[in-house]
View 1 (cartoon, rainbow, N blue to C red):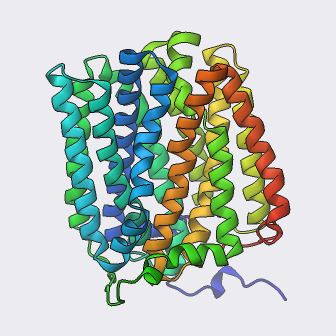
View 2 (cartoon, rainbow, N blue to C red; view 1 turned 180 degrees about the horizontal axis):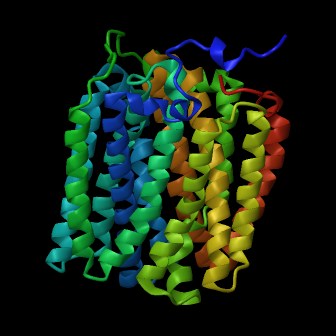
Length: 418
């Protein structure tokens, strides 16, 4: 069977280059895209400022790792209720409130630093408030994306929002590090204004459909997302692989130690180190949008996590700032492939009426891998030193990859995204 000639295509068929950015044809997606960029930008700026501030106050790797714990605990506390809220109430309104809480937490950090009243307990409390906003925003935003794009454009939307996130994580730490030179209060002023802008952007979105919340509130309803993931080997394998690999291989929490004590580069160097994974991830996200990944996706998922582990080991063995940067870029690039495959498959495998609850569980797993992984890295670094902690994490990520390939053979053999 011969391929059709170009003249056989329908006259309204868009050029191939346009289809690579098809999600941007939708006004609501453009607003959502901008809000996701600003949220990620602000979160990264807050993270780098709080990390430097805490380590400057305490000089403790354990305190540094505890920042991740403070952000993660609200994910556990509000796991079931956040998913319930995302499915029973209009997700746009949920996001408006959640982003408002994040703006309030940032304003609290601004007030504390402006008055020179910042203490470790106060900072941890405000970071926990910020984590509460994230706990409700994350499942609502993940489920909301599917309600503003047609199904056939969703994978492209995932790639585009991922590129927005990665662009923000490139700019956020670097910008946060630069602004921090004028004082931490200037960073928190910028993030307070940015979170407030996100509220306005989301309020302007008009989704195609909204959660109706007609199902009775029962224990079965609240835990439906957990049961769905447990009964779907593909989704369970995807989420748990990311959880354990990143939990063990989370080296980014220790970057302030590397910047201050090992490489001696100061807050600007910390910003560049924090941005390096996002540089690799951003380039990869653009490539994924340009060249859609839709074959042997299960194997690519495992390969990307293995590269993540190897890059972590390479970073741990780095003896200079310039050796560390390419390792961190490779780490971010491999993580982007994993995020793209996981985000697309989890959303497309989940019925819309359950996306909030499933996304809440997914967000908890992501939080465990990222924020709880930061706490694990801090504890391990406190006990063994930062270099040893990073090396143990990289080896652990490789071990998890090998084990999960045996435990989830159907995921390994998965060929296509859709």
